[in-house]
Amino acid sequence: MRVGQGFDVHRLVPERKLILGGITIPYELGLLGHSDADVLVHAVMDAMLGAIGAGDIGRHFPDHDPAYRDADSLKLLAEVVKMVNASGAKIANVDATVIAERPKLASFIPQMRQRLADILRISAERINVKATTTEGLGFTGKGEGIAAMAMVLMDESHD
Ligand code: MG
Image (cartoon, rainbow, N blue to C red; front, side, top):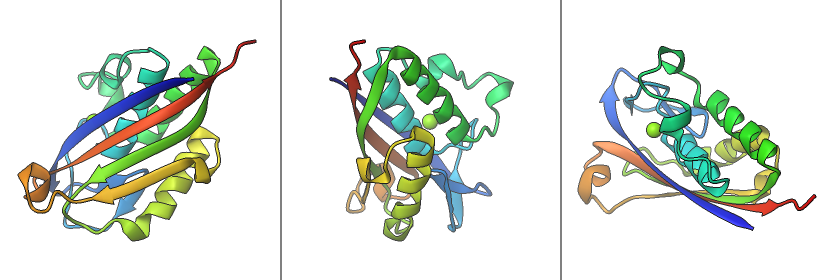
């Protein structure tokens, strides 16, 4: 078994779409970033890269590379899935937490799980997405940004 963890933060700004787990969420602010700034997908990618000992998202998808400008993070996630497959590991489960004061995310979580499951090619039941606030404290509490954490467990194949 191998475990990996990921963490990411993006700033909330006007005139950007809010995309979390590949789902566009109606809100007056969106996340700022070189790509689509999907903070949840980025945390999951870093967790997967960690589990296979392959560094981090910045190494594989540098934010100064014009190829990744406004990139769909699900496409980058699909690239990481290829790396996982090439390593011989299999994703056992993913558990992630989005830390945001607003908007309320609970009603979007089933769609996020399904979208992630489609890319990871595992059952949505093996992907858990949670949302929490920081009770008004810190940058997430003040609505200045959204953070996400993820953990992934992988089975190593021995053939
Ligand atoms: Mg990021």
